[in-house]
Image 1 (cartoon, rainbow, N blue to C red):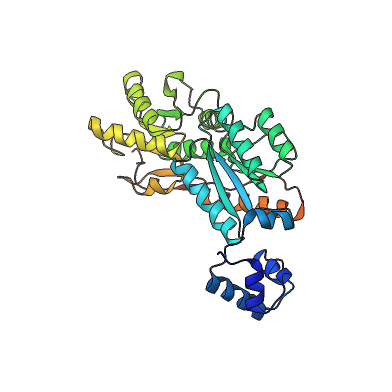
Image 2 (tube, helix red, strand yellow):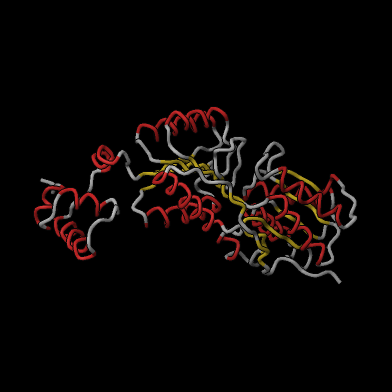
Length: 334
């Protein structure tokens, strides 16, 4: 028979309420008592029942996290930051892969409602009205990561995508490049697609470089589209000297396609990515990129959400800083 909270209290010679307070980090006990209770929990192999705890404190200490592509390096880095902070506060994570499908997102929100999660982290997708209404009906807080919404009460954690893209292109211009192509995300993507294109155009205009639409192509932020769109660029603008890819995965696709075509990076063409995922430092040559602090963004999102869960406070949106990480895929033109 599995040990109960009563068994823990009896063995530790404390009240059931004290054991509950230790489990929920509520304070009101000495360090010696906490140590004794945790020692008994380990000895008995006691596993707290999240639902039973929820009946007592109205919480399950569970957070839902929704990603459109949970297998991407981008999502993985954010999730690492979320988990590191949440687990340190004794919260569990339920990860949902929405796959850019509205129906799947609503199904996952219903699942999270049934599991009585305490809050939701919504990443890299537009918070549509139907999603917002579903979360409102759950009566739990939500925090957006790498996303924004039209709802003033919904906090977000993100970089300034337009400014970061502008800085990436200005970095290439500073290295002497003027024939600069961009592989963007989707045309309809208002979160990271159009703002990064705006940054590209702003940098060209600032340095009086005429915009040529042939140098701007659209992918979907993923590896395969980087390969395909780079080959398309070579057909239409063979004089290109540098490529700004709106994600590291697409930039790595460019490196792969260039290798297969016998094009040397950066000797023949320079490449800069966007995101700063861990994989960008593992490819050959290591990728120069405009980096978002993805793990830190995940940590901030989890911290913001848990604070809202525990205090009822509504946080404001947070813009985090980006940085240019120089590696080996950009050369200076002489």
